[in-house]
Image (cartoon, rainbow, N blue to C red; front, top):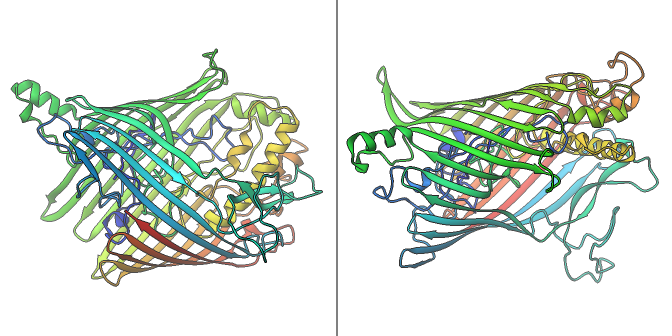
Amino acid sequence: MARSILAILVLLVMTTPAAAQEANEPPAAATTKELPAAPAPQPSPAAPPRVEEIVPDPQPPSALPAKEEAAIVPAAAGTIAGPPSGSAEPGPSGLHGRQPLVRAGKGAFDISAEYRLRTIYVNPLELNGLDAAEVRYAQNRLRTGWLFNWDNKVKVQAEIDLLDGVLAGDNGIVWGDPPYPNEGTSTIARNPNEAGVGVVLKPDTDPLAPSSYTYGLKKIDPVTVRRAWGEVALGAGVLRAGRMASYEGRGILANDGNNDLNRFGTNGRGDTSDRILFGTKPLEIYKAIRSGDPAAADPREDRGLFFGAAYDQVVNDSIQLGGDNANQYGVSAYYLLPEFNVFGLRCRDLRVAGSFAYRGAHDVEMGISILPLELRVGIEKLRLEFQAAPMWGATRELSDALSLMSSKKPVVQDVLALGVMTVADYDVGPVTLTLEFDYASGDDDPRPDTRVTDFIFAEDTSVGLLLFPQVLGYLTARSSAAGNANLNGLGATALPSTRVATYGAFFNAKALFPQVTWHLTDEVFLRGGALFAWTAAPSTDPTETLRREDGKEITDDAVNYNGGKPGDYWGTEFDLRFSAKLWGHFVFDLDGAVLLPGDALQDMNGDAVPSGMVEARLQFRY
């Protein structure tokens, strides 16, 4: 599985234990085996471009199977955070377990590929209006991974997506600016175009109001180079440099987007960093030096103590200036033990990890720290996973922009946020019982002189299928578009409202998510779950609330994303998934969900109707 180097501040590898155990949920294509990396700080929904990813991004390096005699630390062990969280089997790329496509002398070349057709139907998406009463569309994506490997000592890798997010069919022009290729009427249409789904302004409406925005078409680049990086084995460790995944696997801080570890739904674009990383096994180096024999060191990447350090170039505004850059630094340590016994109990896959990351920018007085922690272990039929990411610090960047929409003067705001994920799986024959708890702190006071307290999970680390990925993803995108229009009109130099759009991520919530998985065969399973989601802070639309601010108190001005009073219960969602894999290279998934909305989604009249969703996916992998 591809393990990109630890995110500069990210060094916490966290994944779902149960998912890691299911052979019928294969990782996505375009992945290569590597050690995990560090997590990168991730900001709250109201954070501007620079602060929006205050969370460190963990991740590991990728490689072909390393020769144990080649170095103290195998090439694949070059990640700060260790093996990818939640990865249980080699990816469809086949870089592990099969010969590369081309080998000449000490050189090797290989390609991995995954084509996915995803169809989505939601009715209604908008729970209190008619603009998105019924949504249906199909999306393409061909994801490819490229590996050039010289004797497991030097590697160059790249990940390229084709038609990612491009809608099936000739979709014509809705609202927005051309070009959108269109063959004309449906009767004579011959060729599909390259349009995607986006939030657009409805004609003849107020651009400052969230309700003026709805889903429309946007232009999609047919080819996207997601990542490209190099790696060298130095004997005492691995050095990586380039644009790589921030984290390997599924974590609350970052997600590589190259895995199928979500309990419901699928992966997306993933988190990426421009980074330099060095990873090693310090105790093994000590053993080799002390004995005078490099063979005394244990080069295995699945056990022992690992350490890593990383640097990320986060923002480089004006290249002729140095004070306007934002940089990220991180260190990480983790310990792995594949098998052991405690009081006669057979334990496995122990992972204890901790890291520290810091992101700073002088021009906006930003200094954000994060301390990701992780514990993962299997005990007999029980699997446990715990992830936590406290984040603290200060920044003036949000306040500088948001003060233009408020009567308050800009100040340096304190930042204090927390994200937590806990998962317990217990096997009873062919059935797995799961209890999941997720927490992301929220912020019900968007004014520019108060503490910033909201936390957003990695976009690809989904919680449920409909409430957060679809309904709230749509509502927050509308609020973000209106906020950007407000700030652009006021001449703001930063757009904190950009991060109001969660892109379907879990945020401002406390969720209890019991699930049951029935393994019909090794390749087929059926899963059901009930998601109960409360708000961590009263549901508040920051854009509309700031527009309505008229005094010292904010509670009388606050409204939710549908214009109603802020509530404390998002709703109850029932999810169902059927998944079947054939020959290890073809996967069919059928997901469904029903949402019963709570008071946090009601409009000013107290109305919010139930919603339903069906998603089908066909995936072909090599």
